[in-house]
Image 1 (spheres, rainbow, N blue to C red):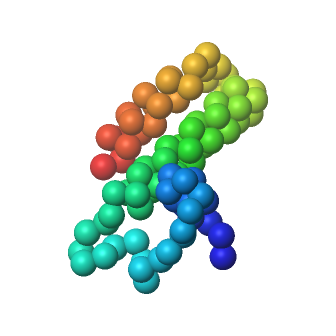
Image 2 (cartoon, rainbow, N blue to C red):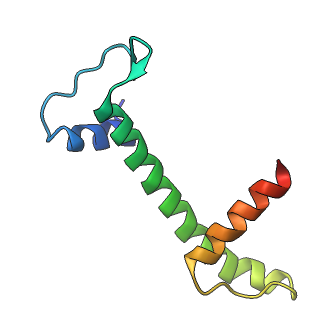
Length: 89
């Protein structure tokens, strides 16, 4: 099964070999290419979620609640996400 992390990993390796060592952890350590592919994959997913979140916020949440104002930047959503995580934990 091809996952986004495997695709990013093969791009980082230059399209060469996509060997797996039974998982991402070898001898208790993550190798640097797998760590880079994990980071890039996480970043891509986070950016996609922020863009979808901004669209949903401005399209639906603003219409449903009168106290919510539209956000002009994705950075406002990042700050709100950090604030919400601090309040929850």
